[in-house]
Length: 245
Length: 310
Image (cartoon, rainbow over all chains, first blue to last red; front, side, top):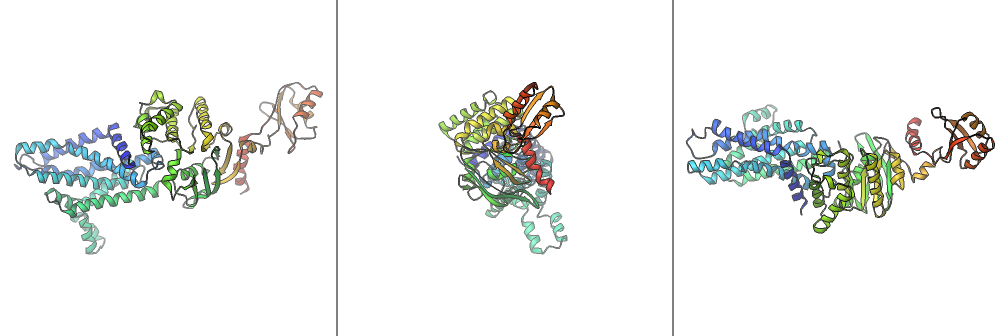
């Protein structure tokens, strides 16, 4: 069997071997439900769509995904099992990918468990299920990008709390990259307009919103793919640099 | 076979391992000795492929640990210091994972798992999660993980640390049983262990090899080598008799237990002469022994001398 798949299976099983998985899933479902119905005005809007549901995902992910990602490498380094893992006959890329995919699949499971809300909206009205599928896909891709950022930052430290905070901050910046709050900051640093435009193009939120409108633009998919690839590659470099500490 | 050529590891200005070269053949059990921080673990981490050497290189059965890392890793069983593992997994789950990643399948996988679990007496705990195990069991799980794929080369970083005397004995017996066709490196700071399992010992300190010899030859460097020690009620009289023997260089009386030790001049055997002299002068001896040399003394001598000179 492929080493990445073996690592993936071990990692995914380890989520469910501890209370982490259940706590995460329950909190995720509770919060996404609460946001949708109370803050999103799901009923009051009188529209059969899941816009209030998906609209809160970026903010939910901002705190929940770093909680999943923080343990990815920080825990391995703290317990010393990284030494075991990286002396097994696997490449660094396989190790990084296997662990990332397991975390992603885990978040995917949590996301899939929100299906009752999809049933609800179909029961209440006649929503555009194409848009909903696209939104789920966009949400999953965004979760993957958050996780990849978290994977890299988790590799930088053996302290999970530090990893968590770094990831929240980095994701917050990436999330809002297209908004004045972040752009003004970079403008203040005296960057050229070209750089500012590039930063604004990095925003998770604009790409996610584009997908969740039901428009599956190849550029948005490509963006998340590239984002994940970049941060995972960065993870391998960081591990290589830091593993001796 | 393990070969290192001028193997070095630097962290900034700090030199952890400084140009170590040695070669270990199958059938050899090499004891890696040195004070804490001498570079033992760093060297082993480079052999196992965890750390990349700053200079020089190492190879496992001809596979360079950097250039053909995967091939080298397949041939090595490695027990990292502290025997880390995945605590939330059950013993059988963890060993099964190692078996999969080591590419063991079908009948071979089952046989190796049964065999390894039996060898390390883990039958009683296979379903327990590793976190709940005692230190001794955790160490044995780490060892099981290292020998599971029947590797040609074993790199064991303090394999008996934290074990009780019975478990230590079992682990040493295990290492000896595997020694015939394998190349084994064991790091330790328990000197009696070198006697028990190693047929060669390397002493390193501050990243450099200071001695490379058989345990017996290292002991022969001790001033206690071929010395005669005895206990008697009349230590002073015994000393007066012994200092008059021509081949005796010095006689010391231990301040604590009044044991008398006669040291020979280099290369001389004095046991017969000591016994004769004691008999003819009528000194009653409770017990008398020929010393083999003391490894701990040699160890101290070798590892502290350069520092004092500097």
